[in-house]
Length: 159
Image (cartoon, rainbow, N blue to C red):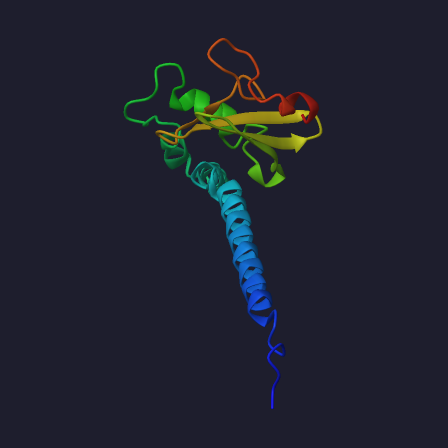
């Protein structure tokens, strides 16, 4: 015959285990959401640069030029197809994209900056805007605001 106090505290222990499981599950879900956001936040822009490099490697220069928001039939005013081929064509030092590696990606408010490194000290800064996903050169290797100030202070320490 069981005694009156044999089950004393079992209900509280069961409730405490359930609370710990819920708290652990919520914490794991929040961490998973943060990691997912960090990984996928710039995914489309990174894919755009990867697509551009693939097209240059395959020597599909007209398609690569379109990723800059330009068209061979209606070229951009300040960056025509001839200038594009000087920068990325077969005679260009940057035309051999097999030598390039993405050294760093910086996430800015309006887009990303991907730093392509061809050799130590020989880098190209590519900017992809979030709205249109057009590629362009970035004059800076870090994110700036409208007045030209660095907005990501951590970029000062990690070049």
